[in-house]
Image (cartoon, rainbow, N blue to C red; front, side, top):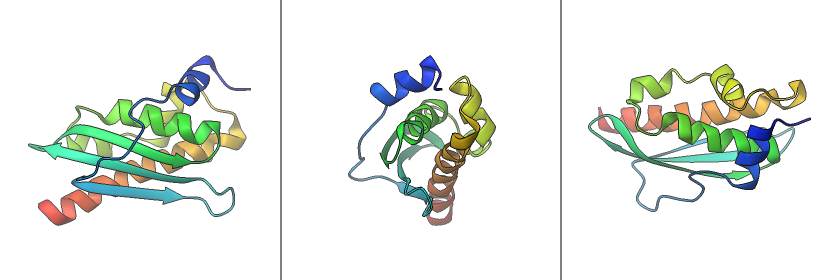
Length: 122
């Protein structure tokens, strides 16, 4: 059902945790399934220098949060805003159709954090 990449990111998530003095925190959730994601950013010169996540949800939700932080780290804010739901799913080598909403949540939480940062700092 899940790819090896999904299982890897679920069992050993990258960038898990909280940034105490984050420059921005993005959130996304799905009230139907109960998944909730937070993405924390530290930004320097318009580049994501540090990114972490906290996710309450299923294996796919945790895996998509983990891969999203990998995709965004070191990117400019503009580049990170271009990370799509499909990019997240493709990076995990696919998700079951019933779990595709998890990639939407991860990308949405990232975009929410970036937009909050831009609103407060640009």
